[in-house]
Amino acid sequence: MRPSTTDHDAAGNLLADGLGNTFTWDANEMISSSNGTNYYYDAEGDRVGKSGSAPTDTIYFGGRPVARLAGGAWTDLIYGAGGLLAEVPGTQTGAPLYRMTDPLGSSVGTLSSTGALSGSIQDYAPFGELFNGSSTTDPYKFTGKERDAESGNDYFGARYYASTAGRWLSPDPIFGEANRVLDPQQWNMYAYARNNPLSITDPSGMDFNLKCSDGDPMTCNSGYQGQYVYNYDSNQFEFERTKVTMNDLTDPSAGYKDQFGEQYTGTFDQDKGVSFTNTTTGVTSSHSQFINGSDPTQLIGAPGSAFAGMKANFFDACGSSSSCQGRFTLYGTKDQFQIMESTLQKQGKFKTLVDGLSFAHPFNTDQWKGGGPNNNYVHMIKAPGYHMDGHFEGSTDAGLHAFGTIKDLFDGAAFGERGKLIPGNDY
Figure 1 (cartoon, rainbow, N blue to C red):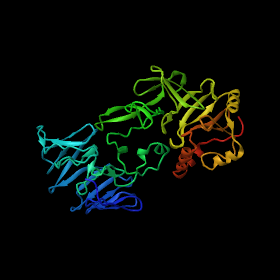
Figure 2: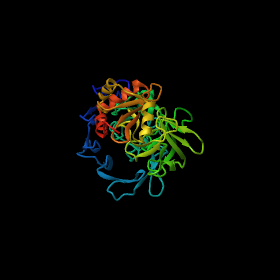
Figure 3: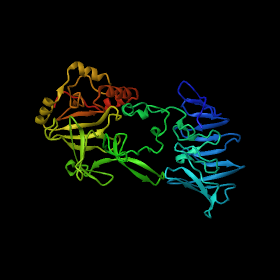
């Protein structure tokens, strides 16, 4: 059933869903009460309490319920690595009930200690709405998230979700990124899982993610290469991006590997950024994305490029992938730097000043740009000694790059990047 009448506040938070549910919101854009039930949160934003007719009818730890008041007695909830395992009902001396889940982690029923089904099997529509009205004491429903009995909505931690509408009750709190502009399914700030309830958020990785533009959707998801793997902790298949790291952290000539057992050679140039070639298939993936917080990765410049024979130590993603694909310190001889300077285009003082307005770049050091369709894909900035500070832009499209730069300016990433820069006047 879809809501017929809805209302939102100025921040876009749902006030009434047309199904009889009403909501009030706190200053952190989280529901503070609904239909006579109050919700309480800690400083981290995790729910720590929930109360209705009783002073406290649910106790939380780490954002998930650990005890519930039902029928005048407390029920303990027992967890394992994969989520909720069992419930000890009544006076805490009753027989436990064991939880069953489907491949998405949704609760489908509970079993007694003898293996008998307690209640009936629960079936779900694609967006999580129950097909039947069967009841279970298990508080988790769709994808293992807690469903509030008073509203029928699911608590996901950062937001609340209405399975009846397949939509979030509040807009996405994450500021728009350049990749959203290229992915229309992400323009709707209330849509669940890009309107595909089987899509899974991938885990973070290390070093570089490999880009892709088309092909098999099982190996190319949201512009990144990877594979669907079964996560035994969440009891569901998840798309895991390919993550490439060095075989030897001190020697780039030793090659690179991914978590799936594939081997690669790697290089970088001014037109394709960082490229990795699979030694088995011969397929090359360019414009690879460095992952913030991962280990530094060393690569050698491609023969014939502006960086031929030079070594780059990649260590950062400039705060976000929307502004750059990888930041690096470039090392080489004086002759190699002279070749680089003659290949790239030196910026005039006015352009350098304009770039400085991003607050991520200095105003008064020599800078070079080049590569890509607009000749501005790589950006080099002089630093002391026989090295330079450089980065590959997050997009070769000027509009998308400007979008990412504005984002970094507002969220403070630009100031942080400038603090990492070491400007200088001489080699």
